[in-house]
Image (cartoon, rainbow, N blue to C red; front, side, top):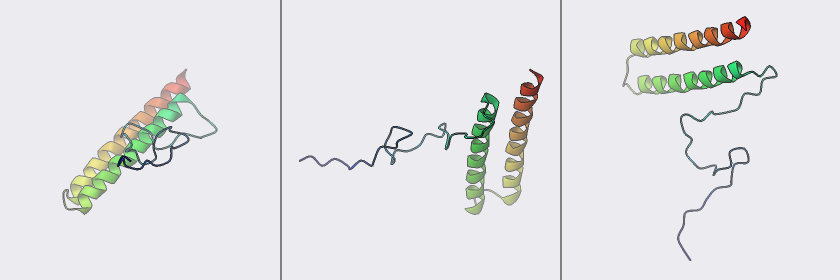
Length: 96
């Protein structure tokens, strides 16, 4: 008998082990809005990325690796980036 690590069940949507590490580029969830469009999907992915980055910044600040002012400035910068992409995606969609 070999001593192999036990594998968890296969995730039905992802087709991989539930215990596998998720890539940072992989979406956390799928967009299920009734008004689906490629632009909305892209914004959804950008919003998930924003949430991940905010979580990391908050963790760094909470552990004393970053000041509150620095954390605020970084969050404000990525917020502006998210707002810019939203405006760009949906302005382009309404023009065509």
